[in-house]
Length: 402
Image (cartoon, rainbow, N blue to C red; front, side):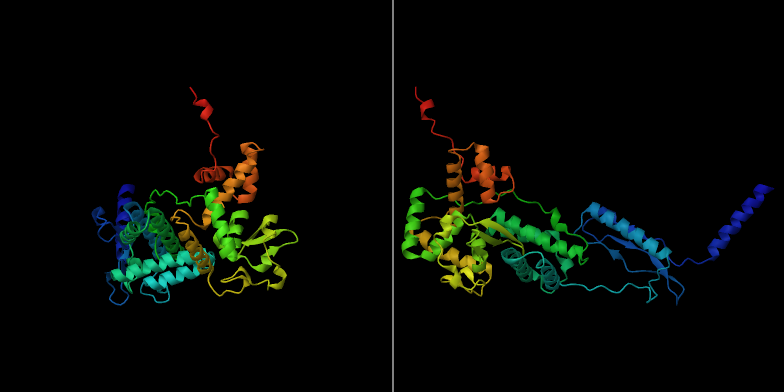
């Protein structure tokens, strides 16, 4: 008897539930039988309040640039979130509950937005190089039919095609640097929810041997210094800041008159960001400096044509001006592309190490050298010294005598 009553109650419950019209269907996932060339999405239906019929809502797609694992993870997350929203009363027909429609960015708008964000963290040459690579990519996209298209139209395959062209025209190193900058711009877009995911992280990095200028021989160094002394004293002083203070060319271009402290024998060096670091000013450089008190402290130490000039130009352009001036000197001595302003830095770091090693152990010599060059670790300095061939064995002829 009791069992019969239970059966009747169960049937009654079923009939009662069926009598209540459901507002929506449970969200489901469509994966196109695993075909990555087709669209994958979440779909559901909702009862139209006017017709009182269940109607299919627009598909909620995921990007075709994602791989299988990424698509499934994203679809599951979207499905779960949508289910929670529907349970909590979300009504796609209710204007008050609808999420405000998000702006759809075209490629140029997306890049401009991300560049404005990046400019806050990158300064000077770093941002200039970054921006130039992104603008070159944008020009390439425009010339390949992407003009005025949405940023979501740029796929992994698109970027790989562009990087292959960069590789063919330049080098693996430049291709990798381009990839890194594009990854940076897409990361900003992902962080600001303009794109779903930064797929550039899945593009491989090529093996690339770093390019490094060769060191000058003693004969080459003496000849170049003598020529600059007689023909271009400003260039000679610029080179001495690289040689004796181990500055990079762009760091020398950043120096203002006010950055030179002759009393405490220090210079204030501006880094890639807005920060500064302090380096000693060796006496050998102080002896070559003119009277700086007659110049405006806000003027550049190295101007376009002389010391203490104001120069309305980007630091990248200022550096290039000095590089071009030195190229004319290089050409006079028939020096190839392996030699440049950086070569002086390598040359004099090697000379300093050879002097230290005369009276110090290798570890002591490198420890002292680290304070001067600014290398963060002993390992980094070891690799650098090997790259510039500063660490060479003593003459071993006596061991070869029969």
